[in-house]
Amino acid sequence: MVKEIQVRTNLIEEKKTGTLVYKASSKLGIDPIEIMGVKVLRKSIDARKKETFFNYKIAVFINEPVPEKTPPTFTYKEVFNAKEIHIIGFGPSGMYAALRCIELGYKPIILERGKNVQDRRRDIKAINQDHIVNENSNYCFGEGGAGTYSDGKLYTRSLKRGDVRRIFENLVYHGATEQILIDAHPHIGTNKLPKIIQNIRETIIKFGGEIHFNTQVTDFIIKNNQLKAVILKNGNEMTVNSVILATGHSARDIYELLHKKNIALKAKSFAMGVRVEHPQEIIDSIQYNCEGTRDTLLPAAAYSLVQQVNNRGVYSFCMCPGGFIVPAATANGEVVVNGMSPSRRNNKFANSGIVVEINIDKDIPKYDQFGPLKGLEFQKNLERLAFTAGGRTQTAPAQRLVDFVDGKLSSSLNETSYQPGLNSSPMHSLLPKLIGSHLRKGFDAFGKKMYGYYTNEANIVGVESRTSAPVNIPRKENLEHPEIKGLFPCGEGGGYAGGIISAAMDGERCAEAAIQLL
Image (cartoon, rainbow, N blue to C red):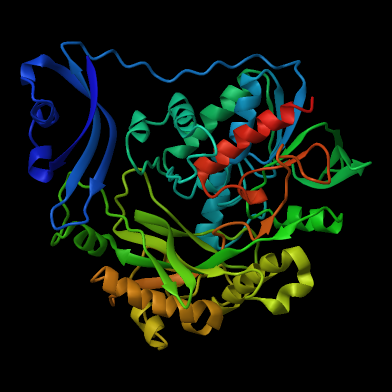
């Protein structure tokens, strides 16, 4: 007999051997000797009260042995000579679209403007150390997309868009730890993701798929509203039938190309703001009600905050415990920040985006002249202002949190993990009133929700502007563009995902839809 039950433990119980068996026997009213083993199905931490608990969902094996572990398996077909599906972009949606094509017996041909994960490292080093941006290879562009070198959080609320478990199992199949199948908020870490991405690439190539790096699409050939070919930056023309457009939320040239060719686009609401950084010990002490160093059984604490300010959402985004802030610009002459965490989340600082909702229909009327690209232009403008404020380098404007909220100019900052921001201009003089005023009130409210959050030891760094695409590429129920046959907008770039897992699920759906046309 196997029973699935939920139990919880405190820190003292968690350190004792056999606690889960004891808890299970007590809850089921049976002798512990009848339990031959337990299997953890789900684990989360509950720190809402003064005492921290671990919540478990477990399978209890009564008078029956625990079966041996069976790793996830996937059946891929050889597709060397199969019908072709072209995929533009090799982030999560592009990768999972390609894997799904191979499962179903179709050949993916992937066109990626950036480099593979190994070669991307040099360009990321150039951004961090020399403030030089390779516009095709950076934190956003290249094999694995933005998630590869900027964290690898796997949490999603998009549970109805596809089979979340299947996406996780595919990551485990390609080298991720099985712990991601258990944790309520799973995370791989930027130090481990590149190897997993490489394994996915090798699977695709092994079974007959093609991946073309340093291959940027610059134009589409359309005849009778049917996508016939793509033009590459080197001038070559590639004939296509079905194209999955998975270019991510930062491929501005693609939006501009579609708009130039009068292909339907829509302006989309999004959010912008700053990234706030605290010493991790402060967040730990708030969340775990502890003083000094947290218990060794507890991971670096995270938080999630939201506040309505004048009927507008101000909220945390992409919170990175034990992480650091990174420069995520995709072009020279702009400043963008993001956050990331290694797998152990053992950095001394915690950071999170704190952003303000931008209503695309009401908030930026002076950008209406740009039509569906008005949000994109507003985003670009703020990033260029940040570049100017940072001394015309890739240096991010920064300021003490308390000085920003008080409206004061800060003269110096504590040492933070993001060194380039230390000597730059303050956020106080950069952010438009629409964003700055709402952030101030939001931070004030956050300080009351999390006592200690509003502190002299917190700094804000800006700008956090790439939370999601400011443009939506419309599609029909069959996921095809309503005007262009054979074009399937996909993932974050199309406006249909908000992270690694939702993008991966959308990639699979688009692959299945594109195959229907062949």
